[in-house]
Length: 119
Image (cartoon, rainbow, N blue to C red; front, side):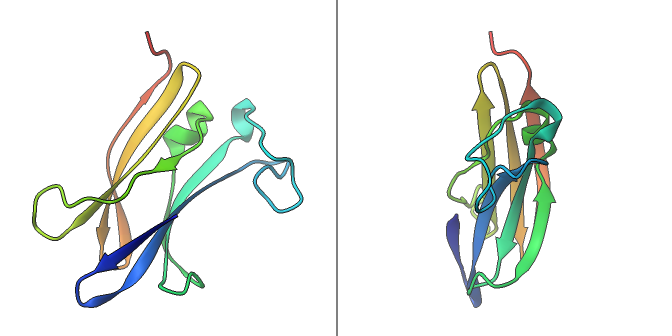
């Protein structure tokens, strides 16, 4: 989870989460299961009190590779005040990297790449 302060607006939180059909990642579920089609991952933006989801995006590349998503602190790449967040992960020789732009209360998917076999 990363808290993002915004000019002239309340802060928001970015969160990544994983889960699967057998309950990994849920309270009382197994600690972790990384098994093919069971892998699911998402990035979401929450309000300042972490009570309401403002926007979310499925992380299809994380799901395809079963890599646990890691959220990097957002940065202003162009110096225009717009924040960009990187979500990445790797599991064995598979991995992914996806960029998201924070526009108001929305997440806009940007460049993404996935690798299936790291040399």
